[in-house]
Structures are given as structure tokens and as C-alpha cells.
Amino acid sequence: MKTMFQTISQHLQNGENLVLVTVVASSGSTPRGAGSRMLISKSGRICGTIGGGAVEYRSEQLAQEVLQSRKSCEQSFLLSKNDVQDLGMICGGDVQVFFHFLEAGDESVLALAEEAETLFAEGHDLWLISELSAGGCLGLYTRARGFVGIHAPDELRDAMRRKPMREELDGRDFYVEQIQTSGRVLVFGCGHVAQALVPVLAGVGFRCVAMDDRPEFAKKELFPDAEDVRLIDFSDIAASVTITPEDYICVMTRGHAFDSVVQAQAMQSPACYIGVIGSRRKIAGVTARLKEEYGFADADFARVTSPIGLAIRAETPEEIAISIAAQLIALRAERSGR
Image (cartoon, rainbow, N blue to C red):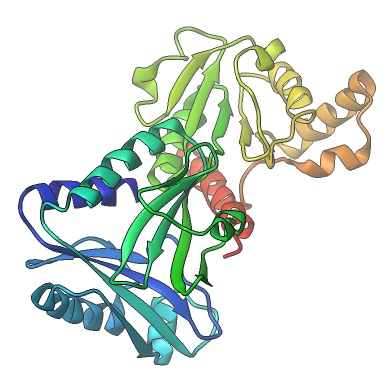
């Protein structure tokens, strides 16, 4: 969504009208979440997708009509079996698509796009609000800043959650979706697996912080896609990073001893995920050591995924990176209610 805001700003400043197409509701199903929006100009689709197939094709055609009429609208589509699969839905029914007309040079939308850039950079939980009534309006929400670019009922603020939702309040119709989480992937160890992992995670929307105690590895040029790269002391990670319940931890240092030290601290944190690299033989040894030295019980290790990643027989750093990314994508989707 960050890229889409940048694209909206660029095209509106260049004098082009646009239509933001959003899947906002479905009968018996849920919106696909990531990928549920696309941006249409006179020349066609320029950014995003709502899943491809016949629904996307028909939506592109209708968006051209909206560009002509200059009026936002909502359209209901009856879904065929293939349409259901294209949109990533869990069952059949119909789907509602909102076509939001964005006028070239619209100062309110341009200001919102600029604010979005700042809010993305601040790294807070961020929601996009689309008002579907009264011709359509866009806004943003963070807990720190409240509503940005839109006046909305307080009840909408109180209803914010991870799962996309559609709410009618005070005679107004809203579609709300979280477009950024404050959670980061904290990667401890900047070796070959980490160097393969960070660009994969960044490519699917995770914010990554890579950390190592070796200056020659804790270098930004090795991790151009990371939000930050830090030189830290593995024996005192709290001195360098504050771990929140939204954060994911990946432990992949240069050796078992360092992995154990970091894992022990991670297990005392509120992180939503703790993954530790290594063989099953190594895991047994580490588990016994941590029980003896730190007094952890069996139940404490239920929070730890080790070996890290999905069991796809990965061997190379690149394959291991794919297995870890897939696991984190699945957890993110589960936590968002998708």
C-alpha cells in the first residue's frame, strides 16, 4: 500500500484522474487482504490487483466508466467458481467492489499521500479508512495520531482490529483495513541465511531489523532491504532493541552458544514468534542447557519454532529463507484473521 500511495501522488500531480478499486465485502467470504486493491488510469491498470480473472477484467472496464462519469460507485459481482478462486475467497456468493474516483490535483488526497509516507516511516500500526458513502473519502488512523485526513465517529476508532472490516456508523459506511503493523522481524545473526532471508521478507511486506556482534557483518550494504542494521551485544539484546508482542524473532547466529544466549532472552520476551535455526540434534542439546541454566520448563519451549521454517527439505540459504518466509506469512495471515 505504501507503493500505491506513492503511485497515486505521482499520477495526480501529473494531471491524471484515477480510480482506486477496492474489494470491500463479500457474501459468506472474506476479502483477500493483501492484493485487494488496484489503481486504474485512462491507460488501464497501473498498480495492484484484486486477483485477476473475470472480476478484475470487468472491474477494469467499469473503472473506465467511472473515469468518464467522475463519480465513485459500488458494484456487486455474482461469482463463478473460478472467480471465487481468483479472489482467494473461502466460499461462493457475491463480492462488492468500490470504485473511488480520484481527481487530478486533489489537494486532500495529495496531502493524505504525504502523511502516509510519514506514518509508514514511523512504523506504527496503521489503518486505511475508505468511506464508501457520500461519494467516497480516504483517511488514515494510528493510535498515536488518531484519524488523519478524515472525520470519523469515535466508535470506528474503538473497532479497529487486524481483520478487514466494513462498518456502518451514524449513517455512514466505512471499509477499514490495517495496512501496516508495528511488528518487525528481528533477525539475530547476519550470516548467509539472514542475507538471503531479509530481501525475501521485505518483498512481502515485513519490516526487518538485522543484528550481529561482528562489525564486518552488521553492515547496511549487506542488507539494503532492512529497515535497520545494528551492531549489538548478544548477551544483552535489550540494550539494543525493545521487543514487543507484535515482533517476530529469528535466531541464526554463527554458533550454538550464541544462539542459546539469544534464545534464552527471546523466550523471556513477549514476541509473537520465536524461530531458531538448527538441527534437531542441536535443539535437544540447547533445550537441555536452557532448562538447566535458566530454569525453563517444557511449556516455555512451546513458543519456540525450531528448526525454524516450514519442513520443505530446504538445504541452501535461499531455500531456508523461503521456508522461513512462508511460515511467517502464514502466521501473519492467521493473526490478521484471514
